[in-house]
Length: 396
Image (tube, rainbow, N blue to C red):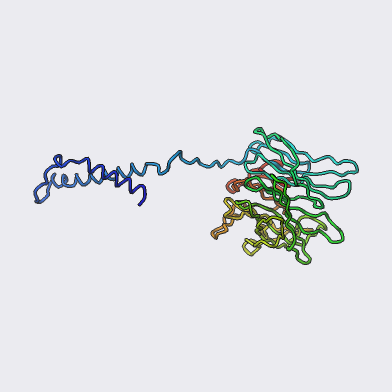
């Protein structure tokens, strides 16, 4: 029995107790009901029925919860976003594009050695960020350094500090990062520097605990003969104990390129359960792979609530001479439990197949960076600066 039914019974009992025997009119004698008496005979039942209906409506109008009503979730995007370009990281206001802060590249030191920002990721709320600097030092060793910074309410950069345990030696170009939902860990996609004798070694996944400085690595088990292996994107499960990443195998026409620039390629959206001490990338499972329905997956993120995948899929006949690319892209949301996928955006590739798909912490506000830069709003791409320039990565 529901609470509404219980309230209805209580209300009817109260009405019944209020009626006194002596106030009831005598029952009419049986006989043919004609004229006005016929209507009078039905007025009482109709009035009773009407009162019951009013009681039901009144009870239905009573809120069935205690405390204040739930607030409607705001659908506005974050106020600021960080965009990574050739000169470093720039903070801009989403509504106007006004630049509010910068995290520039470090100037090269003696002999041309220096560090450049290679990736940026936002923690929950879009106020705390992690940035990766990659480059070489005087000993010719490749390194990646992680820093954190915050944004003030006015979008100013403050508190740029090194992340404890956030130095990776022998690894170059942290191309993609993602902060866990609770802000305690950051996952980093790491690429080795080019060794002409062996080509491009496969990418690895590093995880750093932002509170303790503990660092773990996940590598191996993904090699395929004659193909390069890369990780195109990474995101976190809601519990913060597992990762979802897009594994890509391809033949690169650009020798030593850290990206799979040539087609065709093979892609798998995979899961990875994190355990102390690290492990092999291959120990997880496959959520979804290239197929006739999704022929060329180039980006993939876990969707809102961890119940779907949001992917960038290339479609259409490949065009171009040096490096043929499919002509069109789709951003599609695929339910993991089965169901009809939703197309969130359609667009022309325009010769820029190096696409980056990002998201805020809720998974509802998607960033798309390639030849154009913007966020997806009900099937449309809302432009974000820079336009006409190059945005490697966006975060908010």
